[in-house]
Length: 388
Image (spheres, rainbow, N blue to C red):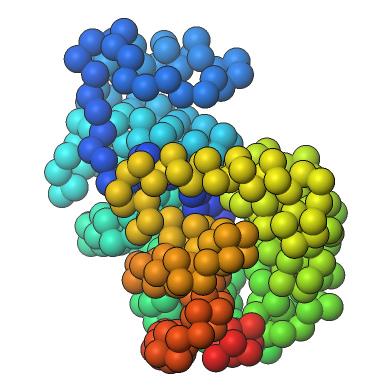
């Protein structure tokens, strides 16, 4: 499910990466001096010198709110661009001067919650957003309400997400789309479809906003079993320009439609982040492509590296379950991983992978468990219905 974009118009990728455990669950490391090497990260072209200067300035003025949030935002953007979540860990470290949420400035608290959302520390994100939104003037915190609505939706808490959506003020498109997302997930597909189509009919939409709305419509159609409509919507998104989230979502759709060769084409040119490489390995295996063996080997190595941290199977169950189910053909391991995943993250893809693993394992109690969970959340998804 695509995250709602920030009110500034910049799209928040928020992709869940199989190696993100390197930054999840660990306390930020505070260097004792400016030249201390904590870990070597991939180079960010043209940014290394500027990053070094920003770090020096922040080391001298760690409680400068404007500087700290600028550094944290820069690292978050690098995490999103590179697919390396260790940058998000550096972003959190940049905010270390405010360990007490109750005393943290608004901008710091919102950014910390955004980073926690990126790292899938959802309960922590919700807690920090609640603190922020309890403050006087919260009616002006449209971005905070929007972020809270998104996190609650990912957790499968649709009614609470609705309440947050209704508090998003200042622009009809975000509030309407926020509510339409939840309506679609609950099965109010006709009304949600009309909302998205009405929003898309407006003139003057930026390419980013149009892409986000069209992707949301494509995902709605896919969950509602309207494959042709979903296919057309995904193609419309990709006509707008490069869009990694849409390319990955379209690849998943094409794999499910037994068109793995087309999935490989959809991902052509995308950076080999973990989420992209996973789909290349799966689609390549199914299509028996010439590159499949290399992609599978590389993905297996990345999973092994991530699993050096014990919490990896908890924080990355979905991706590892997908790999285990399709590539490794190990439904028992896939089921264990997917079960751990849905304990904390309940997007449609999480429940779909859980249902697929339950069905492949042949365990009736697991299939029933998946059915109960889907019912308790109130999710409408014909793909999952077909498995249960």
